[in-house]
Image 1 (spheres, rainbow, N blue to C red):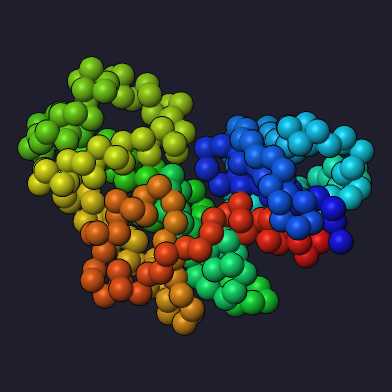
Image 2: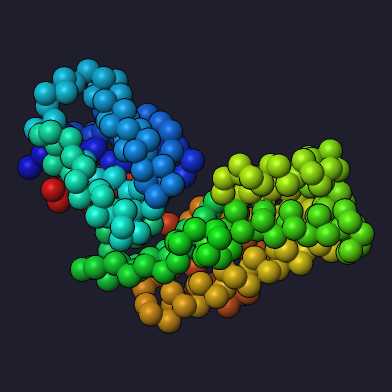
Amino acid sequence: MSTYRIGIDGGGTHCRGRLVDSQGNLLAECRGGTGNVYSHFESALAEVEAVIIELFTLANIPLSRYEESALVAGLAGANVPSVLQRLAQWHIPGLRHKILSDVETACIGAHQGRPGTIFICGTGSQGATWDGHRFQLMGGWGFMLSDLASGAVLGHKALRLALLAHEKILAESPCTHHIMSTFQHNADRMLLWTQHAQPKDWAQYAKCIFDYALQNDPHALDLVKSCAAEAEIMLNALMQDSQHDIALFGGMAKPLTPWLSTNLRQKLVEPKGDALDGAIQLAKQL
């Protein structure tokens, strides 16, 4: 049995790390940069290594104790087969480890290791079901192809709509006016921004869209209702393949829940833990 267990959640814009002893006592916590191994493979793994070193440093434990340690990291993008092949070559000498996708560690954390289902809707989105033996994943292929009900997809739709209103193709609303104001009401500035925008940049507009929807802005209402409809597509598909409890995760979960149908809301359960909890739990098995 390992003396030390390391859990890493690389599912958001930052890696979060936690170090505990064999009794589960917290020894250190810290955070680093992005842990997305699909979009930033080399730098994401560098961040994972940096977080591990910082955890041991904060806990005043020498790195030579890696041999007594087990790591489980849930990283965004680790669901992609080609990425998994590359990850198979990665290791830290002496440290036992397992890398999963962040949705898998989140599913374990949400249901404390018992069978269950989750739908993460944050910057991106993905669903997962754990039946006690294996995972079944849905979605998670990036906002250009997938990521229904995600902040990035919602932001992308909103900026397109704002540009249409700016050009008088559609009627303007306070929401579209606000979005265009972030580009000084200049379509050329918006275009230049899109050339370098990352999913998290698109997703930053999600909050204002929900805010304007609560003010009955017509365009914001349409956008939020469309987002809720996408979430219901994913949730219904996940529930069709699983009879287990289902939990909603991610930064979009709280603002989106009131817009879901009453029937679906009644089927949701509160997660009992998060991806970091799940990673630590899985590390006990290494």
